[in-house]
Length: 199
Image 1: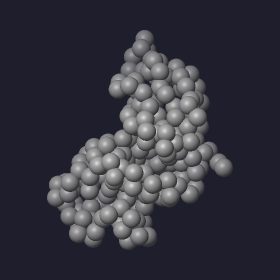
Image 2 (image 1 turned 135 degrees about the vertical axis):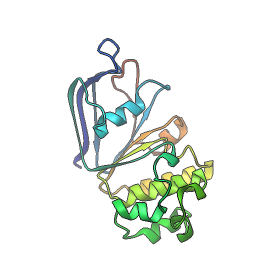
Image 3 (image 1 turned 60 degrees about the horizontal axis):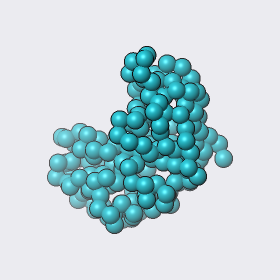
């Protein structure tokens, strides 16, 4: 399977004297899930910002397929004055939306609502729905199920796994059980981050 993410020997820190990443490498293939774990402040979200191109590494290279991201806070993911449906249609194909909605416990009334009308869990499901409909080669998930109850967490992650196809998934999570259940590999970030892998 082809690589959808290739990180080669990057170094980065918010100052030259304090590195979060030093000669850090990571690759991800289509159809593969890798989980990124480590304590708060170790650089997990910074890694996503580097992959997204929001930050530039001091050295090394990052190449990725087309990507989309699901954020930890679903309320930051949607504009407050437009319906969920309008915001999904703006960036994604609506093909297959009914099937995914049914699997995710979403109804047309959810999609025709403004974001503040939905609970955090409903809005996060809408965010994941949008990301899947964008059909990215790489899906970045930053604590995607933290706003959901335990039952919905499992259901949503099962849905993501079932819809992997030619897509790779990079998952940030504090939930060790979730990482062990769904990930092909678990990458533990140290200080500064190198690459300790738990198969």
